[in-house]
Length: 108
Image (cartoon, rainbow, N blue to C red; front, side, top):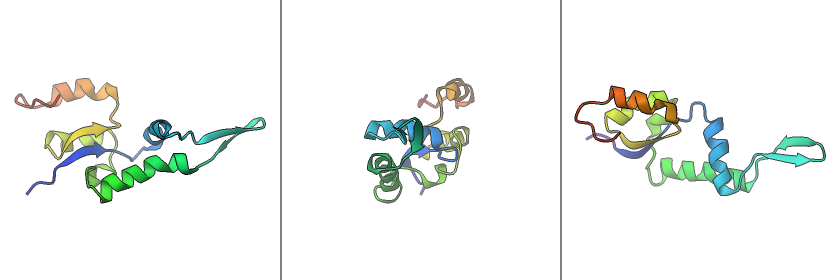
């Protein structure tokens, strides 16, 4: 039986995706105090991290194999139908996906 997940989420270079997506949960990571910016990790910043942990280990909707990949590293798993979509791949990979797909592949 083949493992199938809803999402491939490459977190090898995760700072960008974590920081930008955390905004949806009220997180910002940077707080201005007096004339300095400080990195602060509070409850709002931790919400997304808990969602990712839950998706990996509770409902198993994220492919654990994809987590250690970069955006481009998830493409083979996507084409072999291990997951239905990729989070954090970047829009610049769209043309690569179109060029690399099988003729009968309808996912792109």
